[in-house]
Length: 471
Image (cartoon, rainbow, N blue to C red; front, side):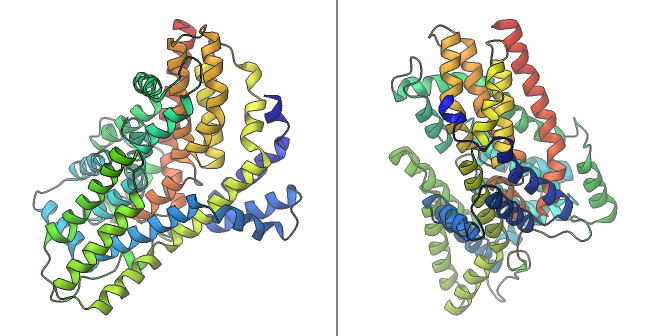
């Protein structure tokens, strides 16, 4: 790791991420916190006053950000169309006729999150926007809805072998140890799934909370009590991470809503294109799927009698509605780029690699990945950084064989990366969960964090047990 040690700035590299988190909790303003952290990091790294706009141009002038930007915009258009056609309202009425209780509503949101397994971006937005009205009527806090949507996005995607996550993860394994091709990498990935404790337990934890097997605790308990007793799904003074254009858009007067054409057909189009392109092209074209669905839904709206001018106005309103989330994502991408430039991840690895013994390897890799992904807000970036260190070490310790140590260590990389990403205020999926549920972003992070840390503690203990007993 000598090369990695040469490119980090030591403990200074942690300052921007730490400052952003502290300021976010203190000010409750995510955009301000991220902007200050970026500016401070630029000054510490010697970029000067002009370094800030240069950082923004570098971070945002990428296909990754532009793809996510377009995805957000098209999802915003679809949600606005759902509202304008009365689709969301009618779906809510359909579910209400089944007399959904608070428990059933939460279980339905949980099921929907697992159903939309193919995209960790679509899942939290779909679950939040679809279930929001029903959850509000059941007096479920927006924080709880955001938690359910968040916990069934990345934790589910990383467990399913036919997602972009699996393709990316197996790609990192090719050429490591005895893994020489895609088939062997996929075989190893399948073996790691039962040992991805954080992802499995995160999904199960949601179901147990929904069924009241585990009672709410911490800040979430307070939020749920407020919603139940006072009918306030948001706290006083909360700033939902979604514009009023996507929460207060009324149905077009006189429209006769067709739930299949106005809701289920667009959703089926998204699922069909995303899954179909993944199966044929090995890459789920989610953004293109939403574009196609939005265009088709717009055509349907015109045939239903909604004027073209109103359709375009609704589409523009939908784009405006997701702007708060896009601002957060823009600064989060910039901070991630800054952390990469300052070598934050390499520094974290450099101060822990001397402790990596066979017995502690899965446990420490899980912790390291969790810290890196929390500090940077990216699980995929964490995988790319840690896998080249962790997997070869595990193979070396196991004599080049695919042993339990190798399987557990690779699973720890996957689970640790998801863990930090799951609860970081800088994470794109955390932002999207707040957006879909129209929750205050920091309220979502604060209420989710104790649950995520509980699951992480259990997962870490299991990795420690595997290392101590079976290695």
